[in-house]
Amino acid sequence: MKILVISPYPLFDRASGDLRLLNILEILSEQGHSLSFCPVGQNWQIPHVGAEEITRYRDTLSKRSIEIFQTTVPHVLRSTNFDLIFFEFYYYAMQWLEITRFLQPQAKIVIDSVDLHYLRLKAKADLSRSESDASRASNTKSQELAIYRLADMVIAVSGEDSSALQREIPTLPVSVIPNIHTRISPLPPDAQAKHPSTMRAIFVGSFRHDPNIDAMLFFCREVWPTVRDSLKDATLDIVGDAPPESIIALEGNGIRVHGWVADTAPYLRAATVSVAPLRFGAGMKGKIGEAMVHGLPVVTTSTGAQGMGFTPSKEVLIADSADDFADALLYLAAHADEQARLGAAGREFIDMHYGRDAVASSVRSAIDRAISLPTRSLRWDRLIAVAADYVYERHIGWRLKGRSVLSGM
Image (cartoon, rainbow, N blue to C red; front, side, top):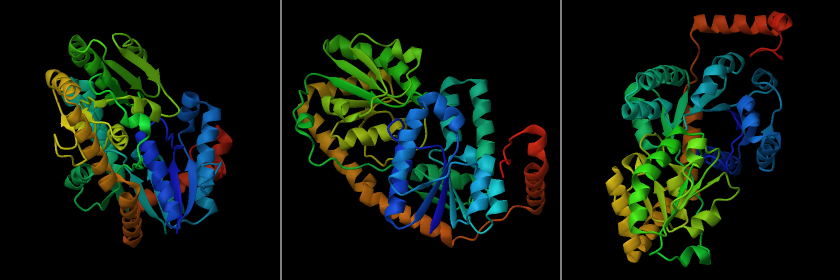
């Protein structure tokens, strides 16, 4: 099957959602599909990580036998017929879905939600009680659901996200592809020889993502002082791309801010506990699965654990207040056996439910289902409007105003 992916390059070592996409692409290739990739979003990716890094991410795809198009989306859509077109994130589908329907009427269109943005923004608004946050959440919900209604299928990252979508759009086909984690077996010796009475906490997360900024500000201001009062030598490593000044300013009192690192494994192996004090969000939290495959016990909030199917206190400790979070950490520091038990239970849970073999079947089922669904069509008025815009831009508009969304054809 010929599949076209329209997405920014997956920055797989900077964000868990991007690592999930890379894993999905690898699985699709392994399952025998012919993959093409059309990069979008370069206007923000290149300034943020640099052209040299973008070349590295592009080469990662090329080495996996994925065809990379170095041209515009309309050019790609005119050049080759595809069986399925896969959009990563709803906002790129907003820009390109209608022209895709016009130029590729035979193709099934799938949107990978990654997480439901409007749910995350609503949770933020509920926390902040800000009218502007509430307005942004409402506007995003309208836009997100509107574009999902035009897709043949939407992919959710968790059963919770899937249920939320189908409550809003009961007729919408939704399949679930969760985060994908590779088991580390056996664990390296330095991951086994811990000193559990000495707390070495770690937080991993991209600071281009608002929930991670909020989580660390909350944790370092309201939880960490209590921990340090009891454990004078406790340390916290904060690892993640693009920390803002508010996060860098947290340095001190046992806290170290490392920013982006090429490999998180050495930091995770040196830690004794992973913290994920998220107060709002949606989807699944890759930082939790990543810590667990390294055998780390995890303390998180109800928000952090959502979508993963944990049994609290069995695979993970849940704490939603600052006092409860500090108590959970101090409890683990005092109970080496519980650290080991939680670490082993979490590791086994992730391997069973979110290991590569387990998720590969979900990827296959989702693609098979998408291909079997009837292809949706644009309403006749939208089809006429898109066709008129396309003809104008291709033959006239670009001459008058330069390159545009549909130009370059």
